Image 1 (cartoon, rainbow, N blue to C red):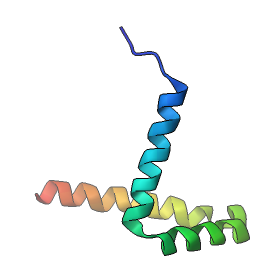
Image 2 (cartoon, rainbow, N blue to C red):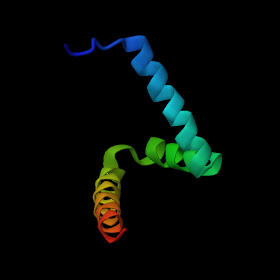
Image 3 (cartoon, one colour):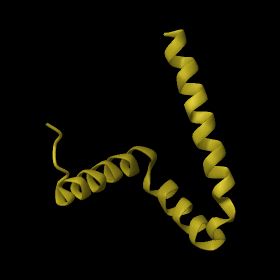
Image 4 (cartoon, rainbow, N blue to C red):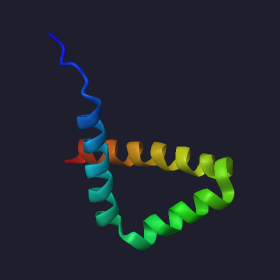
Length: 66
């Protein structure tokens, strides 16, 4: 039987991992990224898509090597 989605628990999980990732990459990076997103809007979407694809490719290669 599939688990029912609890919205409060899901939101808490997203917020928790967002704080962990923000602490890992640093508050300056989060602030700069938020400012760039607010300034340029959807114009930087291409950079996000490229970085996601590059990350997947590099992590796949690293996993195969190890």
